Length: 214
Image (cartoon, rainbow, N blue to C red):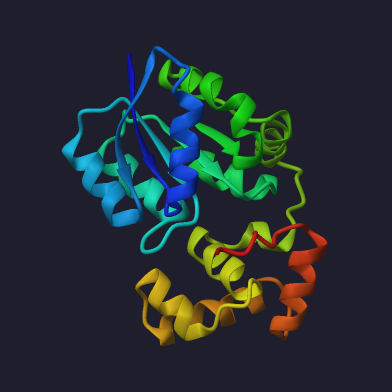
């Protein structure tokens, strides 16, 4: 029996995932979390085999949360389930320690097989993500500007281009407004840009704009 915890801030999504898994005799949902703090609490409590984690939740989330979980529980398999389809999100999540990456759009048909594969210690990623990981490992690879950003900078970048203010980002990431402003300045410098409008245009061009949270 594969015991899993679902960490997603949308009740409808968690209920939908549980419904998908009802037909799988070898999978049991033993816990839920609605934000990063609850996810960490579940990890520390233990008693399950796999964490299914939404990439964008209130509080601590994303790559930073994956890293912290892997620091505290290195052997716990993490399957990322997210609305983000752009390969760059998946690449960063896999590098941080996630074992698998699945878009919510494909969960209906692929979720059970993804859980079984990740629980068995094997990766579950798309061909596009596998190619991106391979390309990034090649020494002659010329990186796009957004790939030069640190994980925290990339997180701030995605929030900025999605329309969040400095204050909102600071509250969401539990940082000071001054720290977020510093990140924004570094992002502009690294990407050789001078305004938020340029960042938004770039994000649209490279499909880096995530879906709006409701």
